[in-house]
Length: 316
Image (cartoon, rainbow, N blue to C red; front, side):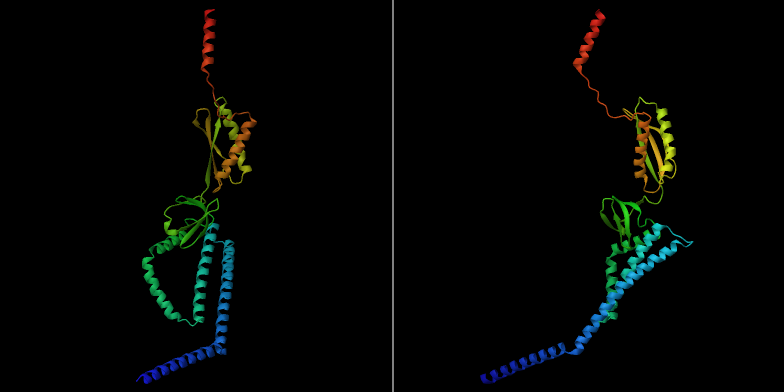
């Protein structure tokens, strides 16, 4: 009985070893077969061609979009440069996404993956994910209305909440704002509830000028007014000559006069600095003093000595 069992176990072992040997030989034969490597080479060449064509198509497509907007800028039906920059950037992003998606599908097809089943499954999964991706849907819808209503464009200086900066890029999902110190803020469009755009209309520069109480206010107003009338010839960013509104405040040691100037969008800070400089120079030229902080020292002992001297004079 034991001999029969041993014989059966030996036969099973031999059969297992034979099957393993046959599988190894079959795998090796398949591995070194010419057809396998030819197929791998063909697939690799296809993938390489797809990647090369993808890069070329994206590059050519971006150049075509840029040229289209250049040609449109010379046509009678023009749109603002801000909107052109925004639409151009958006179309380039959409082109990139679409081309990459098609390239991935073609690569999967070259690898003999069932694209039809994959797309059907992706559609069902996408529908399921869509119900939970409400924030993403909100971002896309908000981004569409930002572009459609031209709320702001690439290059505009805007304020969103506590963030200020130039718009670097507007997408359907996010907006990129670059601060003047170099930080890049990426904001989901759905979080943009209120926007202040500083780049659409002309801006106003407000400058306060202090004059000492001892000076002739009317003379100071005349000198400043004459200067302001010559400024549009000097500065192109001024829309109209600045206006001297008159006395704004009677301070503790000065009379404050206010100047307002309408400037090109986003030029009010630079123009305010220029106006302050020119007003300072013209006041110095005419000898009109701009007040500065003064300190009065009070000495009680000295006051008592003066009072005693006065009493002695009165007694004499």
